[in-house]
Image (cartoon, rainbow, N blue to C red):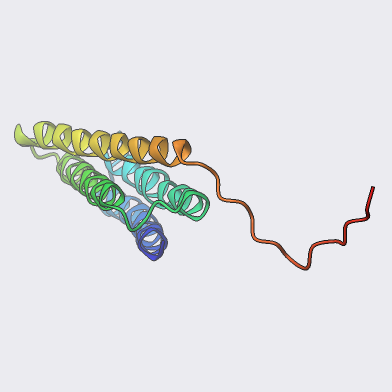
Length: 150
């Protein structure tokens, strides 16, 4: 569970910093058009921070972490976010600088989205397995009430 908490925390910091970068970089270059930099902030906060906070809550309820599927989900999903956001950074920075965007950027961004998709599929497979398992009874909170004879 700690991995999800730390991941959410890191994505929160990166999301805030990316918003600051977008604002200051475009202002420093007197840029007023559309750029991928504007999307980095929300992608990091939504897919990263909020996504892992939701996974944290699901993990608390369904004990997801500690399994091979969870580990695979965690790394595929993080790799997908990292690659996708890195390409947003490159594309957005090149746009603000009025430089041509390398042809490889959209292809690599597509790879990032594929990694994200694989991660989400793994998460849903794991959730499906956990939902099929029988529920464990809740632990008793105190002594059982005395039964009266009928």
